[in-house]
Amino acid sequence: MLAKVFHILEADQKRSALVLLVLMLVGMLLETLGVGLVVPAIALMIQDDFATGHPLFLTVVGHLGNPSQRTLVLGAVAFLVCVYVFKNAFLALLAWRQARFAFNAQARVSHRLFELYLWSPYIFHVENNSAQLIRNVTTEASLFASYALLPGMLLIAEAFVLLGIGILLFAVEPVGAVAVTLVIGSTAWAFHRITRTWVTRWGKLRQFHEGLRIQQIQQGLGGVKDVKVFGREADFLARFARHNSENAKVAERQSSLQQMPRLWLEVLAVTGLAVLVFSMIGQQRELLDIIPTLGLFAAAAFRLMPSMNRVLTSLQALRYGGPIVDLLYLELRRPTEAAAVVPGQASLVFGREVRFCNVSYRYPGATSAALDELSLAVAEGETVGIVGTSGSGKSTLVDVMLGLLEPVRGRVEVDGVDIRGDLRAWRKLIGYVPQTIYLTDDTLRRNVAFGIPDNEIDEAAVARALSFAQLDDFVLTLPEGLDSCVGERGVRLSGGQRQRIGIARALYHNPPILVLDEASSALDVVTEREVMNSIAALHGRKTIVIVAHRLSTVEHCDRICRLEHGRIVQEGAPAMLLSQLMTAVAIPSHGTE
Image 1 (cartoon, rainbow, N blue to C red):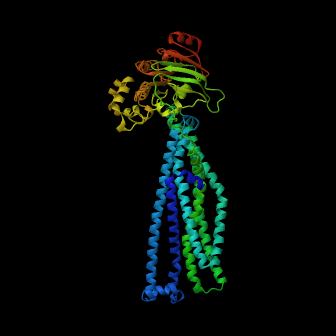
Image 2 (image 1 turned 180 degrees about the vertical axis):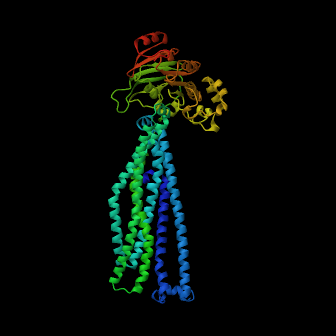
Image 3 (image 1 turned 90 degrees about the vertical axis):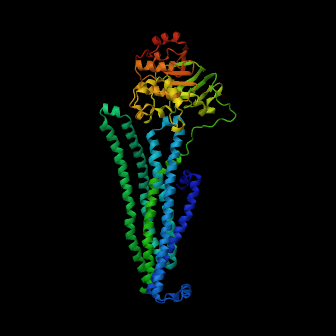
């Protein structure tokens, strides 16, 4: 587990961890010193001749001018207080450093995961539920600090303290130290051995139910209109309640088990002191000689009992957090989408054509190819319509063209250069309008200039894009103009307005290529006509690829291609193909479904 944690940490964090290790060693020495000073302090108070039996102490007393016993006791107590103040101030600083390290690591792991997911290939998001990814970025990254880093550091620090004080006790009273160690150590080992399997299983259950809990929240709130219309509130609440309840039960068991070591250790501490007394009396020791040693062991127990409790609870926390570490370790090793330019390849410049060269694509786990040896060329300035029945491969063609899916065979070229050599540069040449426009709960301006910081937004480009999308009149009706909020997913807008904002977003960067993937299929006939008029205004100025279900959407294209089973089966001018398509295949025309 330690190796996985170190893999998750970045280079500077590993260096910080080593510094903390040194500080924890210093803390151990101070803890040992604090406990070790108890014996001479007690002995000085109850033994008048303590100095005579300790030559080093006698020398120190001589340098101090041989003060009285009362003065020595007061001085020793004051010195002991100073040592404890310094020790605890250092330990407070160490605790702050540990917390800062752990929660800084938590924030960076969360950021790295979100960055990783954003840069992961599109197919990764097709194959993974977003609720699980959200859980990883939020809950799992947060618990990495609480159930891996903090208990790990606490375990090391307290183990150092146990070792240091244990050596001290062994030096003072070997037989008693061994007896106490055997009693407490064997019991603690047995407790950990018995409970570790339970705790690991609970950690996996928490992770499982947490992911499904988030998923039910997402689905219930994301589809709230359908939930209300169909009256399914109780169904979603029931599914959420199941995972919420199971998650709470796991937390309940884990929390209860964490209290057990403290309760048992109190009994063991008293038992250990009793064993020590019996051991020393069995050695025919005088009671007066026993008191300082017993005081040392009592002080040690006062410090060791919390340490042993923390060691056991830390071990439990690490077991509980084991699935978290395993998951983060695997996630952070995932490959991301290559964004670098292939060495030696020419830069991407669009001036002649985009060409599909015998492109084939099969989705993971699918039995048939979504695209099968497809070849297609789209010339600069041309408007091409792609039609076909559902499942014919239209949207897959678009995703391959956008570089979201990588062909299993063949390639997509722009002016003879493979787009995979520089996907970032290729996507800058494309404006994309999907069937469902994703709008953030933000202003109209920020939705058009999607993801661009306010101080970098080009107001002229926003105005130009809105004009192309024929949204000028709509903006004038808004009370705050471009600063008006569109609501989450654009709930305050009509379907046509959302689509045209999507078109404006696609045109903001003034790309030479525009791709529309069923961009008007969910609209009524009148709204569709308005949206397509916005597109028609760009004819000849942009290279446009229109993927459509309705034939009326592509009737003004320069060329139409019909897809079936991932292949182009018909191709030609609209005047020649439209009448054939309307009678030969079940593709709706002029808004009919």
